[in-house]
Length: 73
Image (cartoon, rainbow, N blue to C red):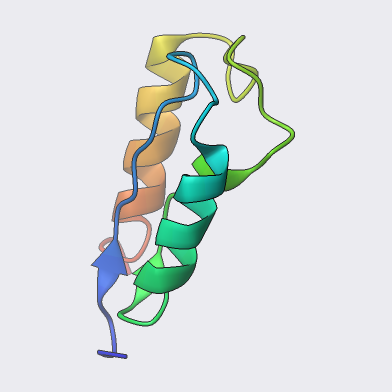
């Protein structure tokens, strides 16, 4: 694993959860290359209702904060 490599993983939540098992496989594979910052798409508890946040703005801001968390140190 490359030290410091940050990986942003994105997959459908509101668009359908039919491939959640594939997301999990991809996330596990990517962990061999670095830190997967966004991995909740692989959470089987999430539904296509978008219960990962109240609205698109919240999801965007949360994901941006995850990606930038180490930049501000």
